[in-house]
Length: 321
Image (cartoon, rainbow, N blue to C red; front, top):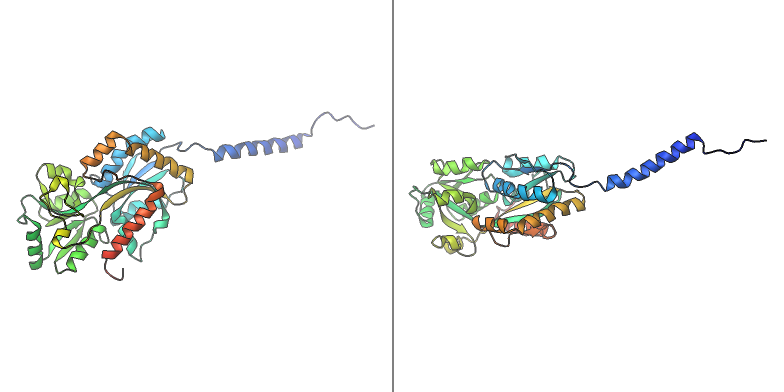
């Protein structure tokens, strides 16, 4: 007579238990809270410039919204590509974000660029500003007409962020019109500003808000602003268009993640940025930076905006690039 069944075989219990644990673990892993640890906030430029100022302005608000710390890390070099590469070589998990600006986008026109726009996932455009040429207060070049006249006689050095940047494209555009301007790259903003103040460069290509402290202290002044109309705070300064120069490449600064990052994580960062952008404090900061009031563009429209800006750059870049 056979024995009565008194329970499951121990081996079957182990298999069943293991299967249950695996099933229970998978949803938990898939639903891991994001973010659950610090997010590296990469600035592909040196301290003190517009990209650095933006990151340090955003970080406290993002920390409050995302409930984790966002240490800001400066990684300058190669017109922003060194810092961008640092982000792109990490996992697409949302734990590394980077400031991405118009000057780095311009590098896309170089067929040798080692990255493409499809490699990044913009979370938002955070600031848009007009660009200008500046001179030191003691410069003998008092007006844009003075600059044009002198550039017909000799090469004038222009402090720019890097070769292939929007700055450099503007210099190349002006040279094609018979002037003599020479791009001199300085990846660190402090070096770029010191160059013009110390007489190592004749002109600086920069955004109004980025050098506000120098403007307020009277150490620098704009001689031409590349915009569609005169800027309210500098009504005596002509636009490039008034001088017959149609080029207008506005600076923008975005926050990006690596392409392939889970959509929900990109949305979490984008939503947090939207919350910061909607605050009165951030709106006041945009005004203080001489930026467009409606600078913010959410993730859904950011790629389209970048493609439009790239088309503008291609219009003015040297043929064959």
